[in-house]
Image 1: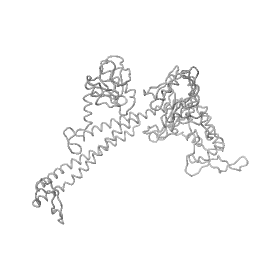
Image 2: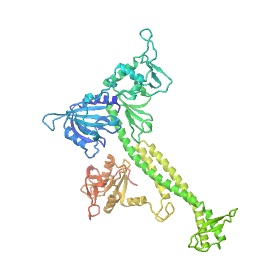
Image 3: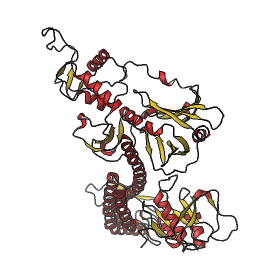
Image 4: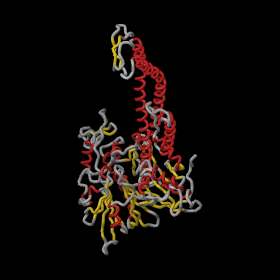
Length: 627
């Protein structure tokens, strides 16, 4: 988040936070926390410390991630629950927010506490400080036990945006080089007030030398630096005046918050990068938040929002969707890559087999020579030297023999090897051609998965991939009696056995999030589904207080909590396939499979849960239903 965007946000939401009492404190995934505020309407202060994209905003909607409470969260609940917010402020040059609180809960006299939020991308963190500004707890424990310097003495640099003098600004502008081909020169002569004599260090001139990025001021991003330099300057004071105008607008408004979609538009990223000003997206794109329109970005796609808080909430929503998209894409790419690796290994083996079979003429030559020289060697020899009747120079060659066979029997053996090799050449060549086509198809599917920028696009690409893989698997996977892909022995692919077991024991559904839901068909099938088919990270469901099917929600991304829609649909299936099917609302227990065990000697379908959560749902089938 840009420093000026954060400054505008703090000024915007501070009046809404003052004197509000903290009613709830919950986790926000693995890298954040939420302060629930007591008010007439639901208000939650969302604080994400995910590096490199920390953020802060107010919202009226929040769904708990249901993670175990950390030491940080327990400390906050101990000292901040019931406390009132006295002030919210930030140093103008830093992305660090100070929330001062007062709490009467634990003592008769008020206790003053400070919550410091460091929202710098590379070192995002949060600290809880006592009255003496000593660290009581920190979000990332590497800083625990250290004494934080007093808030008011954090910035000493005279090159911060709110402290820089006009002379220092001129020196900075000279040292900044060029922007967009425009260079500031200390020695460019201009007409002066004393009759045209002298020079001025703030004159802008154009040079043919390639542009260099300017050094930034503390607290100002490169886009605001570009905003200062982007217009043609008519007099020496223009840069300084433009700089002061920007600072006044950041402090006092008016604000017209903008989301800029830079370099490739609104696309999503597969991996995080180190940011200082925006959220990086796929294809080299980036989302940049500004409190008002910037002239230097006038030609960039953008969206305007009614408040800076709404703009930052939208960025967080995009990031959350991006995280789910990346996890789903990586899982599907991993499956395709694994199959591609197997196909390429098979292709290499087939080509080696073809190379061996293409030497079949040698077997025929050995057979003919042995027939012609059957008197040359007695039985039991490991080899024999024969005159090569097919060579112009009639040189001798050595033919290897099976010592347990006679010379004629060895000739017959080589003749059979020749016939077998001749028959296998077209078969192996055909399999090579088919495998090469399958590899091309899988490579195309991989490109489609990598290029998908929405969950719907991933589902479509994933469905095509699964269809292609199903067709390919039937062409090269052996059946119960057929040869293996390398031509040695008989085998059956483990995936075939697993899929057959799933079809036999469970009904299969697909949730709205594209996750597979399996429902046991009988008590014995429930045991098989839970104990043999389900993975430890899968989510397990069963209706509370009634007999019914075990339900398993697949979790290939190893999420800590199921997506909300998938959770409700799986729970609805558990209620539907139970004795409580006709009830209007049913309580369903759910947990991860690792928490489910079967007591020794218990009857089929009976299990015990180490821990679980509950949800109330209406029995029903999800859409689409299985065919």
